[in-house]
Length: 125
Image 1 (cartoon, rainbow, N blue to C red):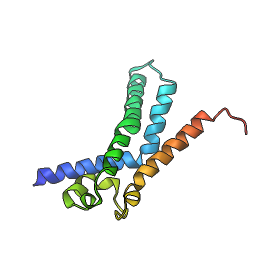
Image 2: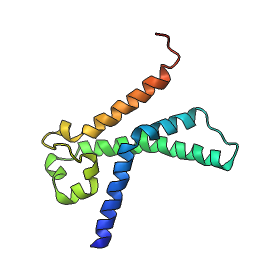
Image 3: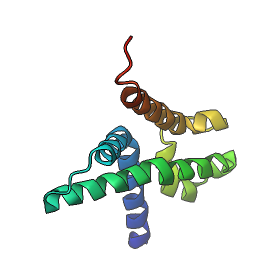
Image 4: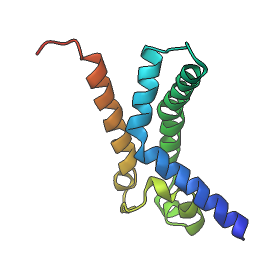
């Protein structure tokens, strides 16, 4: 039982860390993909970590959120499901799909902010 609880807690902490640091992970991946530096071992490692961050934030997390959208509302309130995936909708009312997917909209908003900031940096207003 303790091992099962440790897995749930560890998995929940990873999800919370990814949600809270989403903006920083996208920035890291984007900047390392635009101007990678491979002069030292540390620079090489940083570039690969940046690529991994970009992959996680642009592919794995959106697919996970899309999977969450497909879940029925009553499943979101099951204890086993909440213990494992509750970080995606913790503190959010789950009485409708839109409310339950608050963090999806949060994530999309941050991606749009980053793309606006970097794609329109040379635009004169």
